[in-house]
Length: 227
Length: 227
DNA sequence: AAACGTAATTATGAATTCATAATTCAGTCA
DNA sequence: TGACTGAATTATGAATTCATAATTACGTTT
Picture: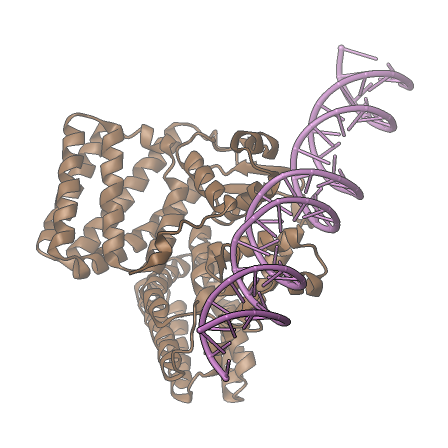
């Protein structure tokens, strides 16, 4: 029994990293926007020290850009960055498929089946919010099933950069239908434990998803100032 | 012409991140060792503020572990971590091969040929130091040739954790010979621009390299306290 | 009126200070 | 002797202060 979990140990800067990361991914802090330390300190009621520590971490994750003596900006997501991210996340997803398939037991599969059902339901009632939540849950479950912490950590960091709410918003109906179909294939592969097949479809799923983002970003115009 | 590059802008914490990272990778700061802020502040002649910022970044890279109220320790590299890293770095290397092959021009190839020659020379004179340097140069050149910044960033972070000097030290003669042979194959693939072939050999090269590290770590005993 | 230069303001980088948790060490008692 | 208690010391987390770079505002000049 692990008692350490019962005593919640956390520091301000960790708290701030999480909250800021969430704000950036959820598009509450928008790309290109400057992040004035003073305002955020007031908002979170902390001093500048832990906030600045948090910004350094977020910078190393690529979510903000620090300009010496000129503060921090929320990093924009350029087309080039999405293009670069596609093969990387695709490769990571491929690996997730391979590993998850081998290690997933029937209990884990049941969990995912449940979440898959929830996702389909959300799709049928056209509830984007619920869909994205369920979708995230499934992919997180697969990542967890893979049982590879290095993979999980890298995946999280890379995915966070391109998983901005802004992109999610303009998911086309066509792509949505395609995504659901891909998820059906994912479930099929999981059920028969086809590692290679799962790896392949997860990779394609990721490529298709990011390509859709890329196109959305393109049509949206190149108003992505990274400064 | 980009004038911004001429004005060298840097901050203390960035400097410290680099220096500390180097010290950890070079095994000057040893795994499990505690990193007393006071000492390092004295050594670098800076205050605790930028040093602590640097530690937060290194923690997010996985090179140190922060224990709230109990300071920072250099993270140990467990067997599980190496095992987890193997498939991840292998996948990234595979991608490096694919991309680098497609984008490398004859100038870039000439550069790598030169470095390859230097590496072979170092091998022949059994100069481990020089060998590792040349080896690093080659792999960095390939990474750069791939022209994918997301890939480069992730590769650097993941590789840094397992690229401790300690592991490098116990490179067996057998493995060294094998590594050189693999490098010859890498050059062959580059010369004829066989992307698939290069991807394959780079992946195998990485798996073999890390497996050797893993075995070294095993035989070394499990004195890797992560605390 | 526009452009330039300079002063005032603001924001950031880093050092210092303060509060508190952890560790060490001495002393006590079994 | 060894284990426990509690004060003294040390180290860490966070706030504050200080110095300086960047931005803004203003006035001058053409």
